[in-house]
Amino acid sequence: MTERRIPTESLRHSTSLRGFGYPPALASACVAALVAILPRIGWSWDGKARFGTPLSKLVSGYRAKFKRFGGAELGAPFQGGTPKMKKTAGKSVKNALCGVSALALSLTVMLGTPVDARADETDAKKLLKAMSDYLAAQKAISFKYDATLEVVTKDEQKLALVSSGAVTLNRPDKIRAVRAGGFADVETSFDGKTLTLLGKNLNMYAQQDIPGTIDHLIDELRTTYHRYLPAANLLLSNSYDALMRDVVDVKDLGSGVIDGVECDYLALRKKEVDWQIWIAQGKRPYPCRYSIATKDLAGQPQYIIQIRDWKTGNEVAATDFSFKNRTKAKKVELGKLEGTGDLPAHFKMGESK
Image (cartoon, rainbow, N blue to C red; front, top):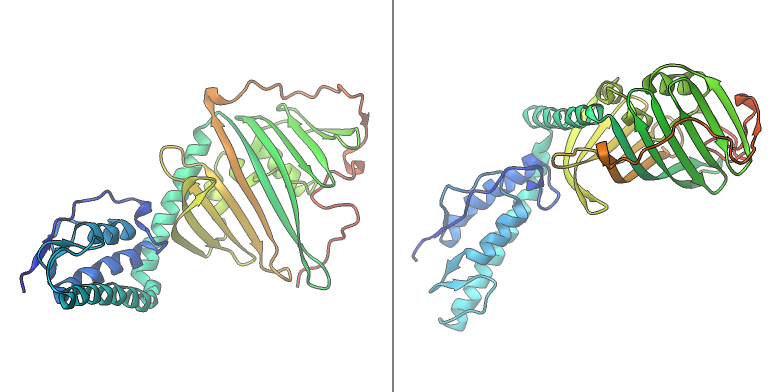
């Protein structure tokens, strides 16, 4: 039987190599397994394809380019030969590909080795740091978002409170955020000196002097007023340090697609929370999706925010961050501005498990 060589071409190495959704280590192992199996059916690897080749593209390439039994192309009608030869060729291919799948499955136990874990962790940290550096370098940012806040009732029913909104910021000290849900319609504005919260559905507003940067505002809102801006940790000038604080485990889980954008998919763990992030690939590594699961609450409810219509620099529309009371809203103290929080008024906070 004549051995046929495989004319594979070198392909770029990128995070899209996880063609079937496998992590990098498993994808490389599958390619290696496939190369090892090829001689058994009369094929050989020409040594040019990198282990960075997308597994799906490699397999589809094999189907398209491999020739055997008188030059018949796999996946195309068989030309020439006997029915027995056709059956043998099909069986060989099927057995080879099934062997790869089985071997790939068995190799999943290898992914927890220290070397692979360290490599994945290093890659994940680099991707997260690149996102943080990119965000910090943008002086003007705007985006729209959809958010889901899960709550668990005392009888263990999980509910989802959904909202949508938009954020515009000018570093270092100006931001406007709007959030509309089924129970609240809130606008938060900050001009570098004064924070204004407007309950549009209530036609009431509150103001508080909090001079400083966006970073300072986020910290004050969280620690003093127990209020949160959408995706607050991602808006900081150094989001990497905030996101990595107390992290005990980091994984690069390959790629995913969010709203048509191919993203790097990372999963990180802390003692009390697990969180995941999907970062757009390419020159603009912005966060496309961010989720946090609280492990010390029954049912581990999540907060999920999905970002769209991302704009930076000159793409961002000019914005006036000062408050204008155009609806003659009533001014109240910040502590008395009810109905503008994350939960409806009739929801009561429970205790951690």
